[in-house]
Image (cartoon, rainbow, N blue to C red; front, side, top):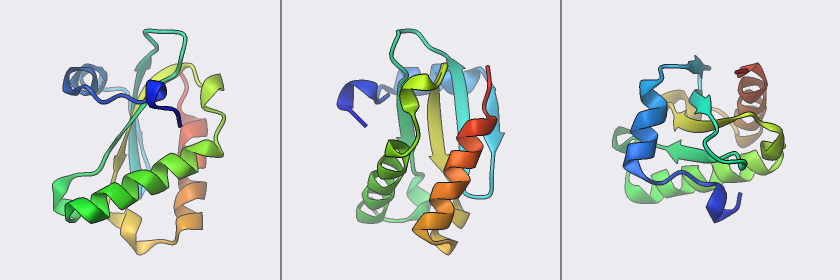
Length: 108
């Protein structure tokens, strides 16, 4: 996922999360809102209570890798992906399938 496709600003995170449109799975929560630009942007959040900085950064890299298999350009929204505690109990492949399935259920 290219850097111009990422949401990093805390205000943007808050504005998307305040819309209160979301979908949940056992491993992820996805908050979404209409796109502001032509490009779809995605933010990834891993709470501090799930591990130290090394583990959180590893998890973000894994989620970014999972997003490469999803056609992000075809999505009609900006999204925030929150990683949940159960993520660490599953394999990478099962987490990837779960994220793909969850992103398909999100519709504007």
